[in-house]
Image (cartoon, rainbow over all chains, first blue to last red; front, side, top):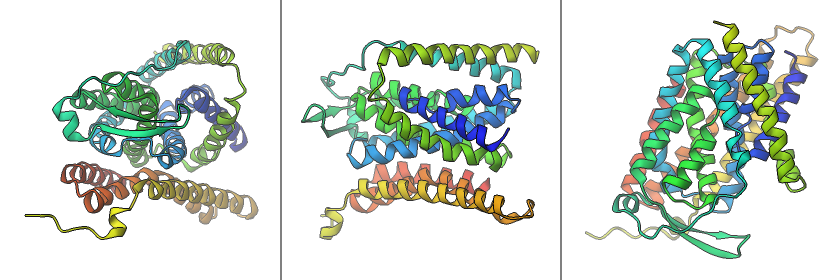
Length: 275
Length: 105
């Protein structure tokens, strides 16, 4: 596969990542595998792309004091263990199972597109003592609402267990970690949507680093594949974040849902051919 | 026993700008090293030259180290600015684990 082609694919993956809030791997893995790249190399490239996207996104969020750094420090303990477990599983699993699971994950990733409403949030009425001890409370200034939002996260221990699960998914499949993490932050721990997304950016970076180290050791990160991905993904994310303002939400949802279902099915069919 | 008062610069220190600088500089350095490696590879007559690949590998490592440096900065912040033992321990644990797997690789 030529550098130029992979660079273009990476830009497209970055655009999709920015438009959907997911990592670019959801496009990268099916496209790479359809051109004959081994799925384990594709997952490794997806993991590298996650570090690139999460670092670029976190850069903006952290400046605005959005993530809860104390909460993130606690949750990273669980997330890193999950990512390590998931990556080891990916290395020992047979390729055809990875095709089925990745294909399923790609199809399931349309769920955020099918949501008609934004994540709604109400402040938690009370906070459990453990969540308070861990430091799940905080505040940030919301520029859209022009007021300071005060929040109290809850269920820290359950959130940690779920983050362990998110780490396994992320390390095993190279995709899905960010979407899962955001939902856990929001639904299980009751963080406001912006705090959920921004904490997720920090945590998935650490999860991806844990996975990437194992892939690197196993020789699945090749400079010829990684270079265009590292250069293309942030460029695409930058373009996508600017397009997002002008695009109609419904059009974006329908278009990407069709593309993702097609790519997911193609991966599953590929898995059947390997049996 | 009362805690010793912290110097003014530590009390007013904010971790967020430091993390932003770490993330931005790592991304720029990573992209710069990879671009340099690619341009040297295309300009050199001998394709098997080691320098371009070395630069690209350094670029990849630099990107991988971005979250690592971020965790390191958070560890120092929790230890010396917030002086929170539990958060320092969480960060030290993650940092130690990342150090082990990263440098083993």
